[in-house]
Image (cartoon, rainbow, N blue to C red; front, side, top):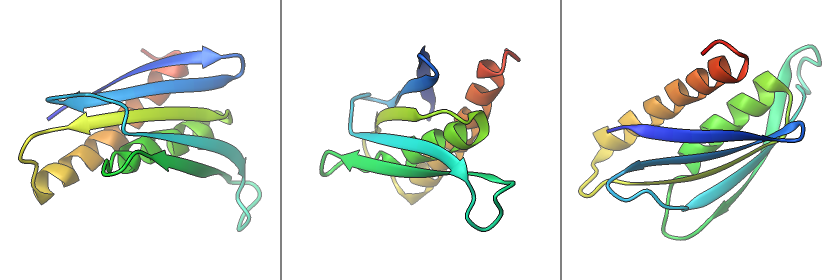
Amino acid sequence: LALSAVATRLGDDLVVAIGGGDRPHVGCAVLAQPHPSTADPQRPSSTASTLVIPPHRDDAIARTVADALARDLGVVVLAAAGVHTDGLDASGISTYRRLARRLADRLLTALRGGG
């Protein structure tokens, strides 16, 4: 199981396309906007809106990436994702969620100029 992404700057903002599995597609879009945390204004946070094409469930992947990038880079992020793997079980879903967190970290490093 693997995820791939392409990110492009759009002015100060960021657009990310995420795909994976046997048949990558567009299953959802997540728009995340950064803001200070309401609990601790010194800590960054983000708010995300999600649009999903039923019956897709790619929003967990897109939200993980969009929230992390918006929060840590302080920019608006639009993430579109579509991952399909035939016969995927609960373990596979868990793996994709883990991969989404890793992908967000790798994108942050690359976008900050570290690789």
